[in-house]
Length: 267
Ligand code: SAM
Image (cartoon, rainbow, N blue to C red; front, side):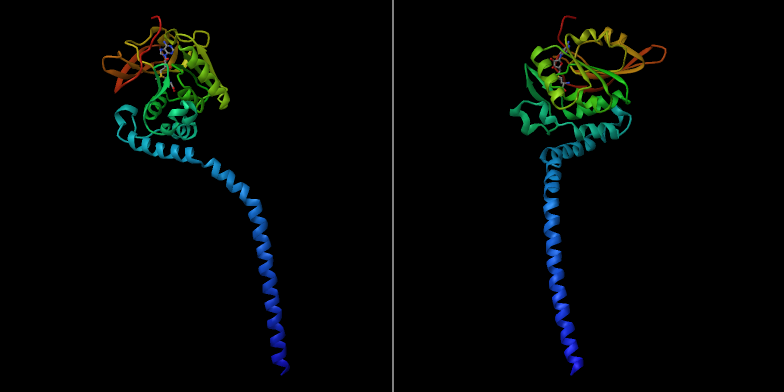
């Protein structure tokens, strides 16, 4: 009898304990949810729709460059260039009415008859520059500022020249607002380069002229690289890679057909 009584008491104690522990777990769960909800909200905003759209665009670019061994010398972009493309918020560099298309692999109008380049071309040109941290790079044609921001992810010495005053003002403001403060911008004719900041390890020109500007060749360091479209508005343009060797000898090679807005100015 005593045996059954003590069994019953033990059962009641266990029931009591398990109810207590259930309460305890409920309280722990409630406190944890209070602590975690703001963190989860933050994580969701860091992983917002633009981040996902950039990741999807990068996947597409990866598959596009797989067939570009003849242009890049390999079938993939370097991790640093991929990281830059996955990080820079392209939607912040386009006018509000173009934002919904910011992560399509197409050029988009930015006003004044100009465009922000196609992401695939931005990736290819950036890759061809082979930038190392600390390199000094010059861009001709700031446009929206997007390419300059990509360059700023790879080195802290970026110089960029734009010839259209409102585009110069807007891109400078965008780059500052987004924290790309290491980009030096200037209003002017990029055909003449930036003699005060020369020489450069790398030069990228994002508008097409019918020849390679001699001042830019002169401002390239020995061992430096320049990438630019060459051709006129009406004829086929080629993306050209210019290499200056350590002895100052210059070689250029046409890599692929491209289509850019014209290099304007007084030359
Ligand atoms: N890199 C730009 C971007 O990321 O948005 C795209 C540039 S858009 C294809 C070419 C730009 O080159 C235009 O903004 C145009 O005004 C500029 N441009 C044309 N001729 C120029 C010159 N001689 N000097 C400086 N900029 C020039």
